[in-house]
Amino acid sequence: MPNSATVGIEAMAVHVPKYYLPLESLASANGIDPIKFTVGLGGRAIAIPHPNEDAVTMAVEASSALLKRYNVDRSRIGLLIVGSETGVDAAKPIAAYVHGFIGLHSMCRTFDTKHACYSATAALTLAREWCAGSGRGRKALVVATDIAQYDRGSPGEPTQGAGAVAMLVGDAAAAFVFDDFPEAFYTRHVMDFWRPNYRNTALVDGPASIKSYLEALRTTYASYEVQSGVPFNGYKHLLFHVPFPKMAFKAFKTLYEREASRRNGDGMPFPLDESFERCTAPALWANRELGNLYSGSLYLSLAGLLDRSGATVEGARVGLFSYGSGCCGEFFSGTVGACAAVWRGRTGLTEGLARRTALDHQGYLAFRETAATLAREGSFNAVLPGVEQTGAMAFLGIKNHQRVYGLVSAEHETAFIHTPPCEPSRTAPTPTA
Ligand code: HMG
Image (cartoon, rainbow, N blue to C red; front, side, top):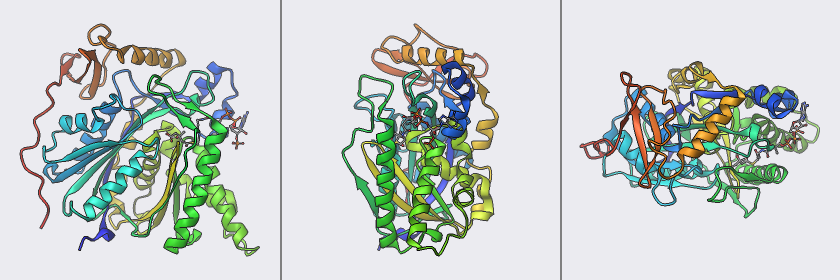
């Protein structure tokens, strides 16, 4: 019989874009009180993708780092799913590029999932079921990769961000084992946030999106509570989708107040702010630096928690709420494995943040403009912005309606064109005994 009770996330790696814009710079350029962004929205900075970064390169960087850092045997990977709402093609999935560029075996199922920020959770659910069923003994690679971009000067602009989170799912010594409780999800057709195919920036009804997010949270949490029997204080940590850090506070407050009203004056062990500091804030440090990763935001929080907490979270139950506009929400939980201590500093977040460079507002605008130019047919060779990330995967433009990718070489400072993609792994995926 398949055993889903041991399936979990065995490894995680985060790709942190090299550039960022401090929110104070954005506020002063937009003539807004910086406190609105840093306290009102709770962020410190937003990651800005270099024009040579796209959803593909970020997914490749995160996946390659995961394979290398955790010494993963590629031949064991039989499923690759990319969750994203930053698709580069209406037909060809990001997963196909990633599969080729990281050299997985051809006997591997690959596809993308899309439902705004929910996409990676959909991917994880599928991966988890596959690992517990027909894929037993093999591994699934799930990658969340996105660039969150809104119009200049719009209320959404300070909630932009970018990055990718790669997660290896399997049934061996997982860092985070999914709890095997019945599922709790919620769908409603709502126009709270969307991005038509002809735009590279999202459209949003901010207040409606917050209302819809909280409604999905209330509904899924209540359903999960009944089905799982886990009470509010059964979670050491509660993590949420983080479009901006203050939203995680709004979400936590919603559950805290619900619990307080159910206790009929019996009181809560800690006041709201202190509970939040204990329960959710320890996971938010990276979200405050990177902004909204869309599909990866929730998993950036999980990576942040595991990366910094080490052994202190071993055995802790963590509740997670995923929300994708449009909308779909899901509440689920898991338990941090016994190997939590080895997770300290392992996701790449600390190094990624340490090597970042701050952009000024002019630099940020220049990146946006160049990225838009590179996204057009014929851009390859016509415009080649300074590719600087040596050793990194780079998007170089479009030629003959095909995207051109390269690896930046240390000696030549130019790109080595990486087509065709690297040879697939020659060993077929093998289940363990
Ligand atoms: P806004 O209209 O600019 O901001 O939009 P506001 O006026 O609502 O102010 C924001 C907060 O700052 C408020 O705090 C103000 O009081 C405070 P709150 O009342 O909420 O606690 N504030 C100040 N604080 C200190 N000093 C000041 C000051 N001024 C104001 N001087 C909004 C904010 C989030 C709506 C906007 O940024 C937006 O539209 N963002 C994009 C949409 C979004 O993130 N929605 C979240 C839920 S939907 C979701 O999560 C899905 C998503 O990730 C997409 C997907 O699924 O793919 C977005």
